[in-house]
Image 1 (cartoon, rainbow, N blue to C red):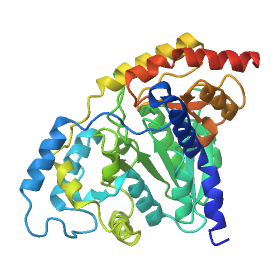
Image 2: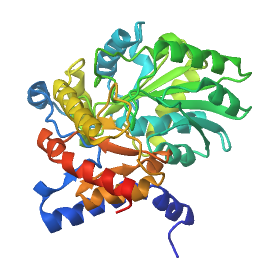
Image 3: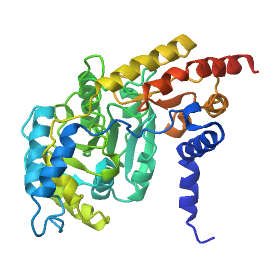
Image 4: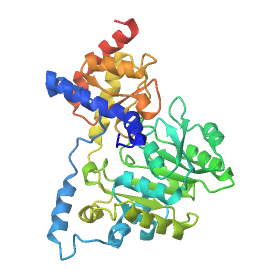
Length: 392
């Protein structure tokens, strides 16, 4: 067969979300979309904020010759300056435009970072449950993923992280607020993680994946990663807080005092080009420069989160209420999370087994859907739980 055996294996490992998408298409065709409760995809359904359309009009009206041409691989200087001002406010320290690289989304940013840091065989720690693509991003650049489970409430298990550090450990990726759990790592946890990483004889980079930073609940905030640890990088995007996932626009921010800063920034700028991204989309760079500090109406997600918590609590599920992002990650009532997701599908409810995120015994539900979808799922959740507990 001409197809790479590695890619065939990857396709099997990453198949859960695809399988649930296909199951959703089948159920919707059979029963009608309005009869199916699809919580499988983290695709934001809110429209971009009103300021987005105004920014697009402003930017396109100001176009001049060369507006859609190449620019420096790290992005327009004025865009990086605008992003740097916002990051400075979020991180509580001065970040300069030269500390910013505009990227093709957070995914592009993470691949740029991996390409710049990893030699073959270098190890990167990821925390389960994790965003499913991390394994692949690390492998793309010759690295080896080392998986560490988080605690019962999905907080950091610092002892477990310390136990897997070896001379080959090059980085750790954290995601806060987390997909799929909604957990936010506290300032105390980050300080403890910094102490663990600093004990190693080699430099270990802390990479924070933060596309959900501005989607938080109950007065929670996302602590500054830069204040916690000097050798840190942020990869983020405008996919979630501006509802622009298809526009593929994001950035990398490097700590102003990160070790080997000139070489690292140079490597990441080169990686942006040679990975085939070349540069972040020109139009979207200019648009997001006008939208720093702007977000969708996150109160809608807050309302949906409360509604979903009520539905699941009344149905009898165990879960940790998410502090951010737009996912629930309840415990499966039976050990086989894939089997239970199958029982949910029988009730026309679509979720994703926790094993797809590196943690069996749970399942993920995305609540970036209309309130009515959450409300009409209530009886189905009760029936699936009853089937699981009684075996019939």
